[in-house]
Length: 131
Picture 1: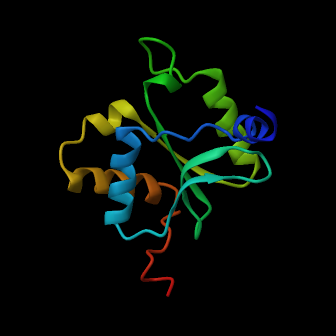
Picture 2: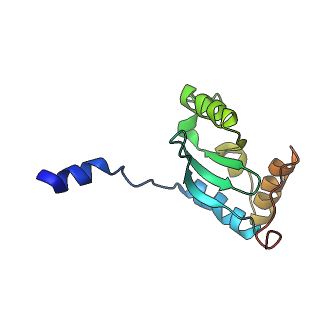
């Protein structure tokens, strides 16, 4: 056991990405937006599902485990994370699973994301616009 065991135990388990999150990331990529997946904020330790660094926008993909059973009421941990991210200066875009699941086509999904980003005039520059 010894030293190797300490190293293995000290490493966090690998982050798993849901199919829902992978689909949202795919649409963000298709929109040509500069982004970072699974960005870890050094100040808080929070992992952001998707960061759009040019606008400091965090897209959080909220699956069913972020909500109380049989409701659309976010759990305390989700509410607290949202509050902390706002205090840290991030603009937050939450993508609830039931809204995403209601969209049928890639175009509808990209329009949804555009609308969510533009709601607060916070659409980040595309990768081609920043070069």
